[in-house]
Length: 255
Length: 255
Image (tube, rainbow over all chains, first blue to last red; front, top):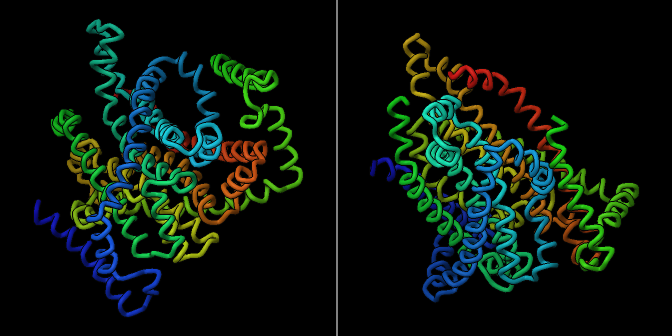
């Protein structure tokens, strides 16, 4: 396992080395694509003096707020819409009307109503994350194997227990997949909102560096974002594995 | 079917009526949220003058090109990583580091590399679209029912036949789920790139009208983007329904 991972790291380092070489040889403009070593130095300084961690923390708080809000609101709604034909029919046209609106298009509207503070960003992140989670929850609830539900009914489970003990666990893999999909979306939307309307945050920082032509600093910011996203994803995978530990065993047991 | 969705359409009508009346009675600030009637009128004028049609065609071209490119790359890579653990281990570190990289953060680099025109938009859209397809395809390939695989092998299928007759069809629902998410992302990211960089297309239109405080025009633009997304999604569902028709019968039989 460790050997396999080192293979992956080796591949990654080869790519980085290739960049350094091409940039040093001036095959690509070193002004636009500074060598990796220069970016690393910039990254190191900006991390030590606390600029990057500070900006990231601000962005992260906003992102986490909107993401959490989306989870709290959307999963119960999705379960309801997955189980009940009535609620699905009632809410679907309105949601279908809102869903195709791309989250970035909401940013100007949110700025009108909420200004350029944290509330605007949290709202936009909430809006953007809600739909992937909602769709996956509805789909997950619906695609619960009919035999499972029939079996539970035969055993006389109440509606509440049917949801809690059968439908929710069976839909969890797909709900988690929705959560995983909306994780990068939440980050993207946070960055975008910070680029268009903000005075701080990592998105604002990257764009500011590009505009003032501090290219290594710009890359350092982007690298920082990649690292944050990476750890976010790893953390999520850990969570995913502990929540879905039963699922892997269930699958390998051949159902 | 039409009858059962009546309640949903009534809810939509209620919300729209409330909006219009709220604006007319000054209960809602019309500067921020103009009445629906005014927005519709503005939209009609923009369509007749072809102003919004031109922007729409620009966006359409970029979104379609970027989506097709990104989805193909995502599918091929996802399939390879799901089917061949070796490829997955080689690419894992690079992929898991690049994947969470918010596509917005790449726009500054994209500008340096590709300028402000179509190639930038197509590149950013393709980048963002490939990930959901990639992950869903990988998950779908991995979660192929072991019983199906063993059955196929017992019947002496070659590994090519196993891929073609078992893995490809059984992963298809996952793939479509990824494709559907990507479709929304394609439009969203297209709008983002147009807002941050090009200033043309529907995204550029929305931001420009908002910055010059032409609020009804801004809402007309948002509505157009929403309609665009809606139409694309409907088209997609049509294709999905046709391609996955066998699955319904398969599930109803209880496997």
